[in-house]
Length: 629
Ligand SMILES: [Zn+2]
Image 1: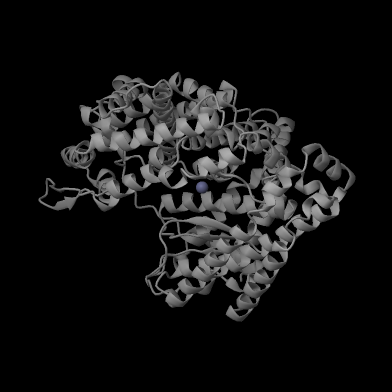
Image 2 (image 1 turned 90 degrees about the vertical axis):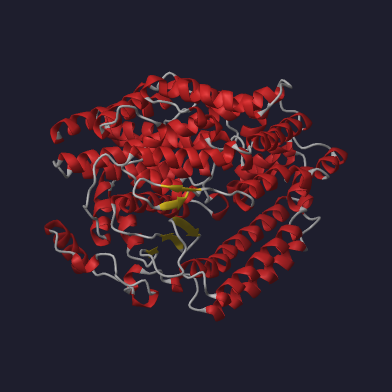
């Protein structure tokens, strides 16, 4: 743990660039990585003995809860007792679950830890069965009665929102016979997903291609992505693309039949539950009005100009005659600038200063609490995430490698973590967990603060260009591309609703048309790109999901704009609203939480904020690149 003096010293050293001691360790052996860069689990449990006690405690509480069956209708005191028991179980669940889970992720080869983790998941499955009676029994009580109990019993107030949500969702629940009939379809409804997984992973064979320098590479998804980022010869990228997409094209009829299965299932379930469309059914769970999706698509279709300008700029800077979609990932400039971890801590902290002293203070405290697992080691899980433990704090896993990407990943995950810190500080357990719909707002907003902070700190046009490119690429990937996907799946679902044929030709036709509408003349759209739909897992696994990436991004852009432009009092008020959003956890429907923060996703202006931001960033890139040339 760092003291204040050491911490200030590190700021000083970072400023003068003498921080070699904090660079990425050479060793991949976990025990050789300094403790300050590894997780400290003692905040959850002092050791495995305490964890075993926790498991026993949880089991006892579960048994006790099962005995409450049949008591809810007796009155507010019984209802309150049941909810409080559920809270205590929930808080305990986080601790007994995360303790082995986090340790397993630091070294997945530890069999004993994996075994303990399996014990937790088995106990949780049993808990699901034990508590299956709870919601149906609650819904047996008239809603007016429950509302009256809540008014008369202040201690029930925290549960008002989850109770209302249960009653709201109940409107599309059928009678007992209807539900039983639908339940018979549960297993067969999973078929499209499992067939897709088998075809696209177990049975798929990617060919090897011979690149310009003679190396042979199998164009698996991971290799393909790497080739597009690292091969500076356009012919190599073209070759990799044709081989990769050709694999899906070869079985496109089968992919179309599977996707038809997804669409028909969606329309069947929507009609069975009395929804007017698959879109209504798909957005019901988060209570998102359908015009959020339609406005998003319409606004983006009218806002493709900056996307095209960016493609044109890249074509020029890369010195290409024709610009293809597979040229979109190769960096325009190479950079050897590194951001060691201690320096990056100072950078992300300094970047959120506009959020105020309370936020920065809690951020600093969280960073010093052993909740960061920084560097890669043998056996460690790849990627990055933030995992909350209610009452203890969020743990962030990274595989930090001193690159600009790693720095932004850190700001992103720390944004999630701080959202958890503020939610947990303000919310009772039952409403402390936020939904995906607001989660990515916190992470992308912190990335944006970091971007502006870094831009303000350098005049080097090359570094500025790379920073802007990072931001623009994120808008292309999480906003434009996801809206194009959402556009595609909406059109496909509407065909199914009208009973029209869904074939590979039909789906490929929609996709090709979309690429032309979004990219226009700025990109040479190769014919084979029309098969892209076949390889997007979200289409098969979670329909009406991808649009949320774009709405989160739009919300964040709007909030950032409100917090950083205009008169000082208005900026302060916007910042207060944003902090209130972070502190509100999951205490309301996500659309309402965002509305209170000043974001109305049914309005075009909200979506337009991202398009404006993209336009402005591309203009800045154009200006910086002119200085480099
Ligand atoms: Zn995230």
